[in-house]
Amino acid sequence: MGNKFTAKLSEIAQKSRNNSFIGNVYLTLPRIMQNLFYTVYGIFKLIEYRRILNDLSEYDQEAILSPKAIKNKQVDRLKLLLHHAIKHSPYYRNIISKYNIDNIKDLSILNSLPILSKEKVLENYSNIITENSKEFSPIIMSSGGTTGTTLNFMVDKGLYLSKEQQVASYWKRHDYIIGKEKTLMYRAGVLQSNSKKINKPWRRDYARKMLYLSSYYASDKLYKEYHLLLQKWKPKYMQCLPSAVFLFAKYLNNNNLSVPLKKVFSASETLHEFQRVEIEKAFSCKVFDHYGHGEPGIYAAGQCEKSHYHIPSNDVIVEVLEDGNILETSLKNYSMPFIRYQIGDIIDGVHDDCECGITTPYIKKILGRESSLIYTGDGRVLSSIGFDQVFKMNNIILGQIIQNERGKLKLKLIPGSLFSKNDEKNILNKLKDRVGLNTQITIEYVKEIPKAKSGKYNLVISNIKEGVI
Image 1: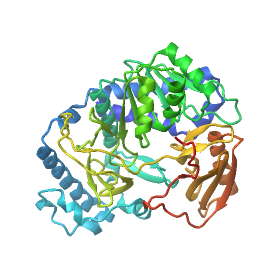
Image 2: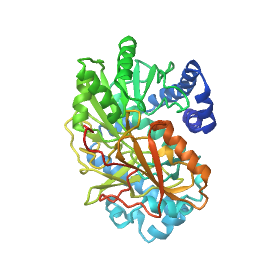
Image 3: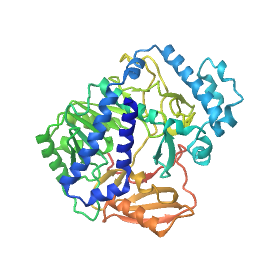
Image 4: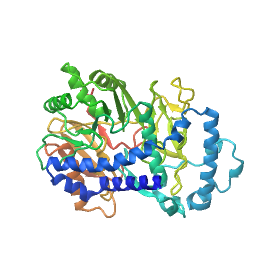
């Protein structure tokens, strides 16, 4: 009963957050009502979070199991998953039915199975979905990532809760409890329409004691306002995009200012060492990063005191190819199995025996997850994280943003068969909402967008090197 109720709350909160009608209504409201929107959403999320916090025994246990016990547990769960995939998924039935699953004694069978790429998911979507998928009450989710192409996939309600548990467990290890003390949210939220004057781009979630600062706006004048605001509000923790908060941290350090915090939690893009140094100086505390993504697999591999990214071994098996590409097998997604899914990120490998005492395997470094900065026509510097939303639901096959000069952007678009002038207008409006009306935007329609040397598509390519750091 508790898990079903929590799952329902998660679904309501997720749908309300992604609902375009609610988003458009939000933009028309005065600031006090926008704060109310954040707070109502926060109430749902706080109830969900408190229930999840009381059910972390599985994650508490995995942190102290021996590496051998962790592997044995993963083998047992892999057997169940493969049996299920063979029986209920047409795609996997054709691929792995020849294997004797009952005789599996370790994880080496994965080496014999084909890699599931994003392209294969798009091509075989309906066949990957299991014939009894409704039994798992799946939620339809999507990811744009670094490609600009929307990838839809199903996530079991149970896995959705597990993803939230991954985050809650990671924070709990750092004594961070949402709603207990004030949290500064320096992420891509608080987006305002370009038709409105940029005024006080911060909003409050009173339920969870959260203050949201927009990462879309950046200037010394605004940073001064942010600093005065934070001096009065006195937050204790921060969740942030590293490239965005780095610019604010640099302003603080250059002006001999600080905002003392207990801990900073960064996510969604690579945390570079030069950013860590600047952020830790400005906020007088240590930064803890976590790695994850929306597709079934790793959602929150959080750093420990030794700065290692610990993998939630109850939920996922991680492999690494010779070139460093990471493969993930989600052990808890039965409506649409993701087995050996290549997310497109590069890591240094998977390791054991961390000195911090947590026994789960870990990643030392995320090597290939970059976010380019975008220089707008009105002088702002933006992180490209979140810009994949520009291309969502607009009938394009692939999109890319290229910047060769400050204040000027080129859009490369591969249009789909249903693409129209209305889609073009929607894309331009979404982009202008982020970069402002003073940024020049040109569109080039192409048949192909080349991959980078890493084999990945890059959503944003910035050819402006000078002054980035």
